[in-house]
Length: 314
Image (cartoon, rainbow, N blue to C red):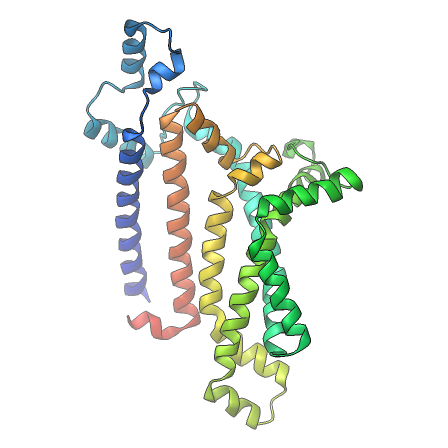
């Protein structure tokens, strides 16, 4: 198990280094001068040159890259050109919104999808199975921002049960904060739950056709026990894959939902930084999100090894 984990750690390090180079290079070749954009088209060349020097944009690309990546490794993400505050402070402020939102959406998706997938697999070919598959297909086809708008109209405008948007902050109380996040979490969770339910059903159906399942049934074990104890655990590997990918998507891919609900999260921060050409914020937050995705996938790999000991020998 230790050698398996060490190999995966080496892959994580290489992936993060490659991702940092790609992110830095892509943002550097994007047209437009951040200094001139910040000062406006009427700014003098001397003022632009002074700001470029202050921002470090006059230094060689290689030197700027190593200074940036070295600062990130030491916990210094740089200073925002637009807000004139350390990027790490902006990340902390926005992470207290995005992280709970992603966790709530992932929990909702899992709680909904796995029982639905098991229910559908246990009733393969029945009317209930057909109805579940039709519902999941609809959930995959409809964009989450449309779900978001529909939820706002029904629960915030028509029924007035929860706020339509904004975030009061955790200081206003956990109840009010969670009430502001519940609709965005549902809007994010429903399409992901549809995907996860179909994967769970497919994985279970594959496992239910194995010889050891037929043997367990031949011994007279109850169908529920066979499904829960023998089939479900062995069907977890593709489910864990989707869960890992979903958490990464929910944390990094909330730009549209956060803008629909006016949530001050990481997605909205990246969107604002792109429009303002605040390169240091975009670079640092994107690499941080990439690191989150890679680390989550690393944990999923470890979960694979726990679920299937055969993988530890690879």
